[in-house]
Amino acid sequence: MKNKTFNLLFVLICMVFLLMGCKGGPSPEEKIYETLEEVVAVEKDFEEQQDPLVELEKKEKELYDEILTLGMKEFDQILTLSNEALTIVADRESKINNEHESIKASKKEFQKIDTFISEIKEDSLKEEADGLVSLMNERYGSYEELYSSYTEAIGHDKKLYEMFQNEELTLEELEQQINLINSTYEKVVAANEEFNKLTDQYNKAKVSFYKNAGLEVVFKEE
Image 1 (cartoon, rainbow, N blue to C red):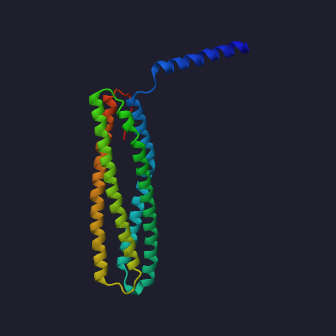
Image 2: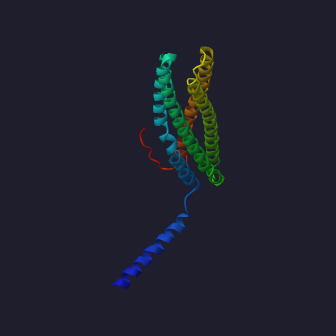
């Protein structure tokens, strides 16, 4: 009985290897699909920073508004609140850096598809894949602009709360710093809108590529 079981198992293993050999492994299109979905997984950490960042920004705004209602007679309270705000700014900086690392890892993973694109036989599909790469690289470039503007804004925020801890702070100095912060956040908003637009375009182009490549992919409803 033991020998018959072993023989049957051996035959089954041989059949599996024969079938694998006939199939010839995944196509270039399937390799691209696997890589692009791995990019999604790598960017999970990026997505996980979004809600905490928004929450931190909201808390910081509340502290900022409270500081502005206080007069210099309440300087001790201003010191306490500005220190709390500086802690939040440091947390924001940590999260935006985590976000940046996630995007850099995503870019490294994404670059793997270049080899697979060269293996695509159909010219129109290869051209579509090249377009997908161009769009994603534009998205990565857009994120770098967003990251640069956001870290610049964080630096200005930090300086603002340090200025609040100076009893000799003048209204003119305060207004200059606030104007600088506002202009920097205008750049952040513009960069964020561009990044979101390119992300949406890339996701649509990716779905189009999957369909034209004949890949049977089921997408979850958003």
